Length: 585
Image 1 (cartoon, helix red, strand yellow):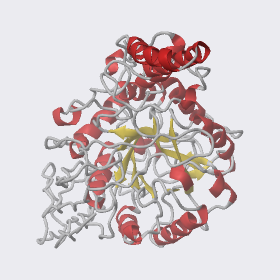
Image 2 (tube, one colour):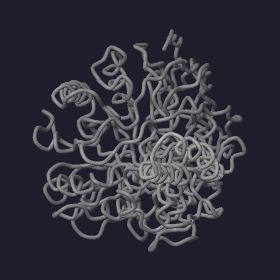
Image 3 (cartoon, helix red, strand yellow):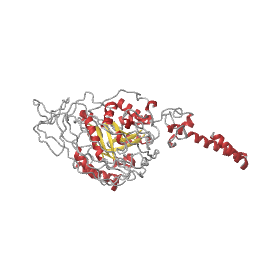
Image 4 (cartoon, one colour):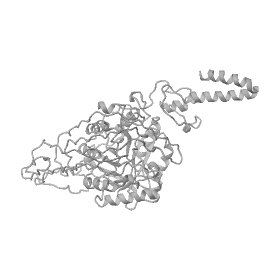
């Protein structure tokens, strides 16, 4: 139809105005324009796909079923799966074909208690670049990152994370914590403790991109609070700046040095992960100029399969020079949409399994565990409201299949000395109301408001043997629609950071008390604190010796499940007296 229209309009005009030879050349140009228009339009198309990556069709390769393949390559290949009804991501994962080497329906994997098999993590191995456990053995964590905790509150509950642990086999969950969301992050830290997996507290620097901006004036206070509360926990890792951008490494490094010093004054051992320039893509900069206190410090690398394939050689090169953690990556373009690019995703993840000349294995968290209507989201729209944690998009289907097929499990590895945490029913955190539609996927403009206080976690949790209690989550509100700009290969440019225009960050009300755990009677010889609810503990068999720490052995580790001392006081949870108000975005 477009050719016919152009013929009637163009031919009559050309016939009257110009010579036959010129008319022929102009006609050929009109045909080329019409063909290009056809090649970038697909049935039901709504995405904006940048097609420069095709190199005039030379890089189209095999059809991955995506809408952008149809828009950019259909004219070169003659047909495309999206046009013919194939899956393109963002919808049901049932029509999503797995790349070679990834099974289509692997069995479920339960990694509950994974932390008990490995304990607190540190750096070791070749060159001190490998994440290792308490026994010095290499550990490669695989898991999911949340989206903004304030935008998809119904996606983040103990129930949802428990499903990922028990069915997908994740060993890591990353809590993307914007300014003012510290209380919700603490809930997630507690749930991950009860489930026995590792957790990253991600201070989500994005807009503004300078972590020294006054919007993050509360960063030191935030990290002193987190370090004070979690310094004794084996499952926690700190990510102190998500994606610095628009500033140089010396500026970013100055922030890192300041925050690392604040944390190390309280917590000397927990892994700290530092963001790198250009949305955490330029790992060469810290390789040439590391932070002042590098002990147990790693550096961030972020990757999106449709935008950053050209950066894989850099990742391989510098993984043999500095410790790297992939705290965020996606199957789409850096916009969060387009694709999914599953073959490129598999190439990337396979590279992480044994990167660089030293063969270091790199851990990852995928963006994002959310039901946002975009390709990179793991869940189909509405899944969180209905608590359908396995209703996945093509991207989510790929991730769960890859993780189940490749994730490490405890196997016969003996547990470490720490007893499992007692299940608690974490207080519900009210979701803030977002009044506008943010411009991008994960970047409300942070304010300089202080982080709301939240209920500290008791340090002496009772030992229980039953399964942790599953909490429920209220029905999710609708998610805002956002966009991000794609990135071309070569020198990295801004990938995902337009400034949001109208989404104020709301503070999270702090719960007024902690529910009482009544599964075990309280010890009679411990004083009861009357100002706060009492957390009971499990009675101890009198015939068992009191063991506080397992001796270090050099051979086969010995089971060290220690009975609980009888004299430990019952811990109470202080109730915060008020919540600071975040005034504006």
